[in-house]
Length: 114
Image (cartoon, rainbow, N blue to C red; front, top):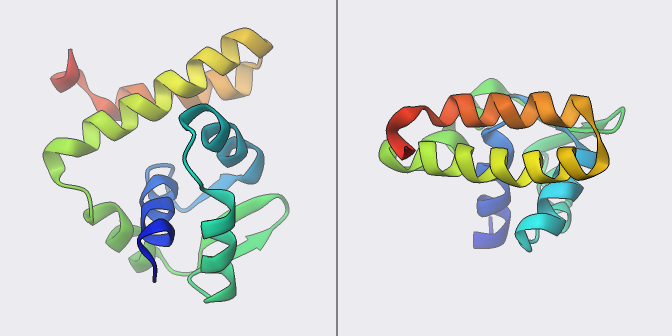
């Protein structure tokens, strides 16, 4: 898999086994990082599935492997980065569901960042 695909899989892994495509589109736009095209490539390679507006890992071990590609001390930074990006959009668009996802990410980040 290309670096771009692996990077996108790492992002997706921070949201668990699956994530809404609309959420990934928001992250792609806010972080200015290609996500959708690399995740589509992962679907073509049968690493991910795509159904009902979600990307999902085909097996929990694939999600765990993608997540473990981050150093443990960097995971909190990733979760906080995604949470803050989503939080700003949730506030701007008055999207309660996205706000809950943002808070969840920030909580996963823990207090190490503060």
